Length: 312
Image 1 (cartoon, rainbow, N blue to C red):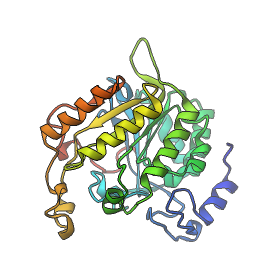
Image 2: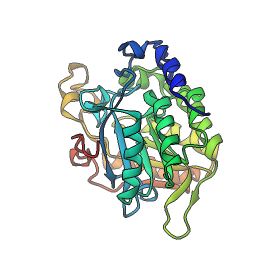
Image 3: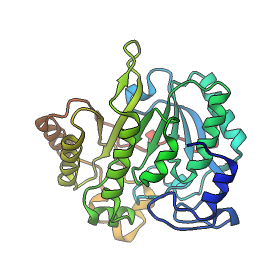
Image 4: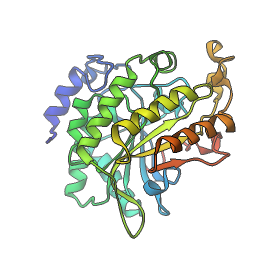
């Protein structure tokens, strides 16, 4: 889909990009659930080495962390940028330049982190950058809480989709993300992503992913049963035509500890080794072959990037 400035103004004046369907007139400075107006805002653009090996390789992924979020999970490790506390405004021209600069720095791909609420602007910036020589793959890194219709704008612009599938339970998604419809919306979004890019293609030389879908699932403390239902759904639906990344890096951050309703919930502690092992064993039993797991020591705030405006 060709995106123009007129398309952006039209979409931003009555925003229905995400499942929240806020209808906010962002061109007038109003904000919806994501907390952002019509101007692109980001908190960091730099080489990033903490993705799956086929995404970051040895040279790093060119990650652009956008400000705001349409999901805003209470436990988000990027809490400050998700709620819009960090970030600075960017023009369309500057964003397209950033993509090219990351390529010049040796990035193996461009990694759009939580860009859904800026979709038309990002599409136009990508079109401009590709016209100016951007040739590395583009990764769309998402919470999974997307409108499938909005994702169609990305067809032909994105090579790799990296969505989360966080919850199967509407109780959990309502409690932790105020999104009881999360599972249905995320499943429809992942189906659209898979339609666009299909089965995974990895470089035979570098092992880097060139095209495909990696679905991430973060195991939450006390939620191993929900994790198993998610893995069962993914394998029953896609078999080994996608990669599945099962993560144990949940970190109880300080802002969550200050919330009375969660101070004594399972979210107040990390995931145990036994919980994680049960989920990995289940994945093996049902036949998931194309997957990633995390080793011990990942539940630490040191894995959270500094959202200091680098590269902007």
